[in-house]
Image (cartoon, rainbow, N blue to C red; front, side):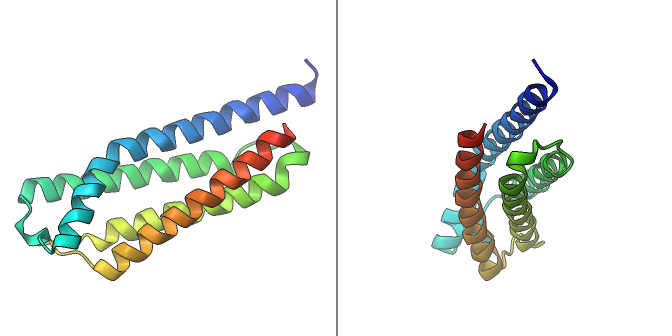
Amino acid sequence: MNKNQLKIMHYGNLINSVITETESTQESLNPEFEALRQAIDDQTVAEMAPDVYQKTKADFVAGTAHYQELLDKLQNAQVPARLLGNHKLMAGSYARFVAACEQMTQSLGDGQTIDQSQFDEAEATQDEETEKITKYLQKISVLV
């Protein structure tokens, strides 16, 4: 393999790792998210067991921190020149996704209160940026 092929291979491995870890984290947090979403929709957040609410909050904090670590990997990646544009767009979307995760986590207040507008806005941004990340990944995979 020549130097450029090695760079592409390392970049592909990094992207695969980041996406796999992102999906794994999302899958582990999804049941807690769904329970929160249901409690918000049913207006029963205050009725949640306090330990469940606190565990959810702690898990969201840990998940967001993990997403930030993955973002750091993306931002520090050695990117092949022909992929740089799409990589920057994807990393920008990932950064906005992480910011929305932080916003959602911050919407979970003490005393089992949730800033619903902040939570809803964060959810919409996460969905939007996830679609963009997928789009940019598809473009990158075509170029590799």
